[in-house]
Image (cartoon, rainbow, N blue to C red):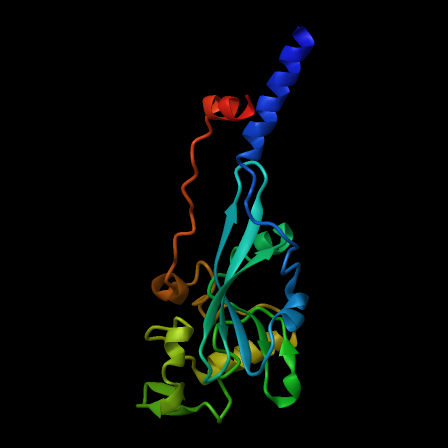
Length: 217
């Protein structure tokens, strides 16, 4: 009788834990930044980390939400399952571009950079202009691309020639760049002000031993 009671108790424990496991199934989509090249197609392409979230109480499943920008083509927002290590690695990179692919020879880059860096400095998309004696060499998109500033959550921020040069220097050194004054990234002044967050927290039904007991019986 004692053994039977023990097995029933273990069954309840299993049922309880299983109710808190994540619902997401299937293989991990993004293990590290190198997977982007095969996961997303097309050029020009920029992948911006829009948000990150997790599901499961005891057994965690980790997700990234990306904004995928393909030039003049429509943008899309996708949620992808990622590895735990990659999720924690990028907690400070909300609003940042994690991957870029250029039109020219499909050249790719995995260095974490401010959003929009793929297009800054490219005369096909805009140019550096002087705005008076105090504000010089500020990037301005051509009219057809002006909406890009919304895609990149720039707000009233516009990169300068010095900003662009510093970004290229960091890229050549394969080092992340968060701006001349830490404008970008999860704790960046521009990102915190303009990046629109979404609440991914899901309400979960409270576990009930009575409910699982009835189902078990």
